[in-house]
Image 1: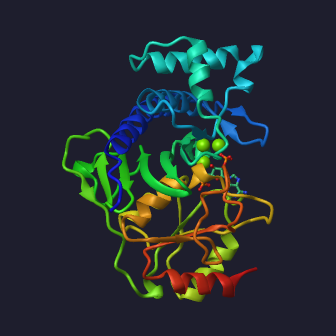
Image 2: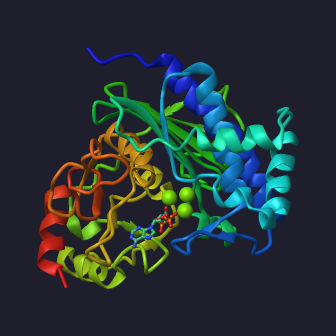
Length: 329
Ligand SMILES: Nc1ncnc2c1ncn2[C@@H]1O[C@H](COP(=O)(O)O)[C@@H](O)[C@H]1OP(=O)(O)O
Ligand SMILES: [Mg+2]
Ligand SMILES: [Mg+2]
Ligand SMILES: [Mg+2]
């Protein structure tokens, strides 16, 4: 019998939706306005605000659950970043949440756990920050991991318009509990009856539709081109930022999402995958690394036992793994 996790999934959905409202409002007004992190990747006012409100919401309901979040407040606390801090506070207050700057910084740092606990949440407050800055796709991804297994996921894709989207509403939230299937609702109409998501039934490699990262630093585009050649599919891979790619596979608009390593030393972060992985698995799909091994979420904040990520509708998984091996550059 799978556990129910009713309160976990409803709290997670509400939290990612509340964060998405902030992210959307910032995305509309933001110029090319990001802080640079130590690894030179960008982080915006919205990444921090999103992490703050989600960690606060989780803490309220599950005070003992650690959170492994992408961001922390260290650089934010410097004198030169005072204007940035003030803007984060303003965005949070604009949604009706009463807060002080000190509280917001402490909420962000609820997300500082290293993932060594038996039960913890992992959070990417904005996945695909580069897409967010380009005013394209991004996601807010939250998952609960218990004894190394992802049990609950909530994945908001505020700019994703799916085949299935109600009245052309833009933005969806997908959620899943292990053993209970995956569901999708429009971000702005949470009261409607959710749709059950289901991966595509396509079996022929010739018909496979692929998606991959926009950024050539995040996935090997040349290698995936060779994979498509091996499979015999002529369609170009669709480039999408963030875990929105998992959402696209989960609801059957693509059969394959490839993340092929560009360098040997990069370890995938758990928050870049956990939410999306459960949503795809509960929609009937399969996720492994490029060697066909299951992703190992029991190793702290990274997937250090895995190389790359391969997401399919399940039916095409073996064909895709073979093509990746045959096409390795
Ligand atoms: N070399 C890399 N290989 C794979 N993923 C990467 C690499 N560098 C950064 N990332 C991560 O890819 C994610 C975005 O994925 P996508 O390109 O599919 O939108 C980001 O969370 C980013 O992490 P970070 O935010 O720490 O920079
Ligand atoms: Mg990310
Ligand atoms: Mg992020
Ligand atoms: Mg980032």
